[in-house]
Length: 437
Image 1 (cartoon, rainbow, N blue to C red):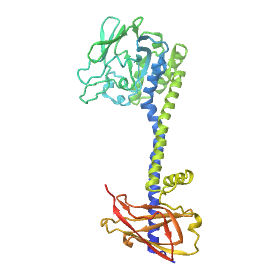
Image 2: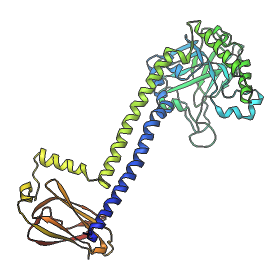
Image 3: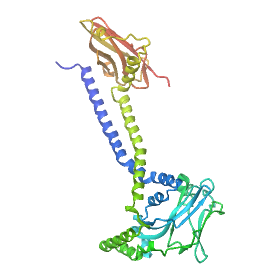
């Protein structure tokens, strides 16, 4: 027996809803999986390290801050440590690697500039704990800098500012200082030949902080000797960037450096150090702690949206069950239908629901009206081409929990809370009006 037109249309609408639900979940779950795979790594690379460094410096754990700057190697004892009332300055002997891949193709590389993979000697450390007393931000005539006095008495001015807030092409502040209250110091051998004192000027150009090592710091030290001929190694890196096979020579150099660093307990190869392993573990744990709540909230949100827009309204049904069944809150104006009330009569009725849309001439959407009884749902699908009228064969009794799926711009006026099915044929008209904005 062929289905009536209303039945065929109802099945078509259900298939369309199922298809839309499948597409929605595939798309949103795909984005969720992408978040789960990338967010921890993003936080670990861009936001968490600065938080861990700031926390470590505040408790005097300078080595954790140092290894997260990722030098190739460093000398375990500070070369300079100067403390103030609420912070200080600390510097370590270190060798860094250039990580800027774009620089390997820079034309300036031919003029002796350091490019990706090359090494350089430096003093590496932090200024910390002075955010309330050292002002470095200004959008005009910012005088913040680091003045290094060398062993011969000459002074070199090194820049500290690294971001331009107003886009005028001139740097206005120090990013890590504004965000986390510390300044990363990196004084290269190419910047100065030695360090006899440090003088930090503030935004007005006045001296705000000073620090003096016990003796002048130079780049002649047993730690730097562990790296042998750095210039020769950098030449091999440059040749490798041009396509020459220098891998064997470079690997031999790295092996010799690691052996030299490991031979002296005062020197550290960063990647194999306990401090680095502990710092990375802390960063990864913190990154996961940041990412997991976001991912959970995302998946809960997409389920809630799907349940209200595409699903079977399990959330509403749960709260109805909890409030009316568990908490025993009485329904106002509703007569709770028991199972025996619904199926207490042994006859069926042809029930017709019709929409009165005379007050909304522009309305042309489809409408679904649901009632439930005995654990089942009964759906009236009302379409414009069928004059918004649908008929179902229902057993006599009381049907409850009405739900109408309609354009949110419209609303029913007299949808009955309980649909009392009596007689062998019955009709009910529901008036549709425009919602007030």
